[in-house]
Image (cartoon, helix red, strand yellow):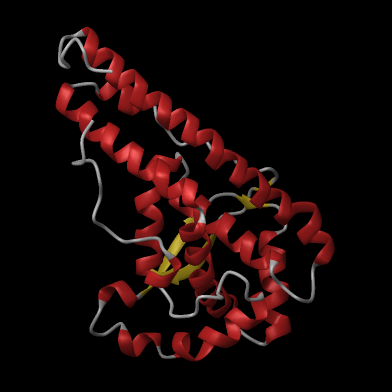
Length: 232
């Protein structure tokens, strides 16, 4: 359907966010150690760049065990939970950027969305609604402290993934907590690892759905004579 669906917004490649190429392999503890000084000075850099400002992401439900794990690790490391979640946000974005299937489906989704808009098929676009649900949930209203560019980056992949921005952030924290060297092994193995595994399955299934969205738009356009007869 052409190249105009490609987006030129925030790149999700890990190297766009950190010069540390080993961030994905780093332990949760090492990530905190790497970023804690930077996060303590965030208010200074945020004065000149609103994308660097601290921001709040609200959640009505979270994966079971996530809040307890975050609070426990924050206490163990001697930092506030808001400091912990801001530090881990860097690894969260590196993780999402490393999943090639996400980059693939974001590109296909963008191309197809633009075609659906050009051809007049909002019904097909509206059928792509948020569908991801946590494996196990704790119905607790809570907030996470992160960074504005993190929230913006997650928002860019939210619609293609059919996953709310706050859900993406919560799953990302689950991933970072699975990288912890100490503490919470029972909760991690029983709940957090399962959440990460389910999300990765969702990404693969969502790619199939996005491909179907592409095929539906193309099929309808051909039926209405908006593509030449010999278009494959």
